[in-house]
Image 1 (cartoon, rainbow, N blue to C red):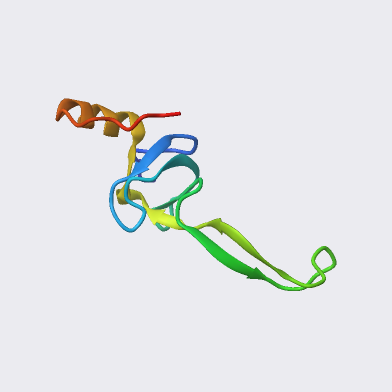
Image 2 (spheres, rainbow, N blue to C red):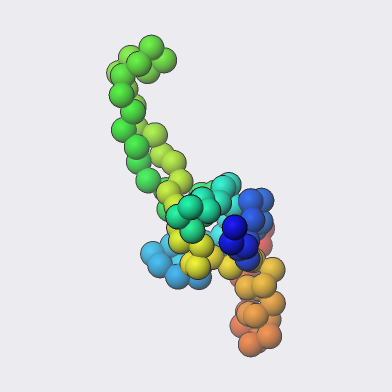
Length: 92
């Protein structure tokens, strides 16, 4: 089994792709496909069929997966930014 640089529950930053700069917590790691699902990142719409709970059907927003190479631990990312002298965004 392969070891990864991140695990479930870690705070990460997306470093590449359309969601670059987004932060979130890892919900799950899909080891068979080398992908991670990050909370609040890569939101996609899924159409649900009609059922007893939703007689009309509905559209649900859920997180999509990112390749594991496109994320970095937030602490490591911030340390690198401080090392090169970049200003950090204000956190509220």
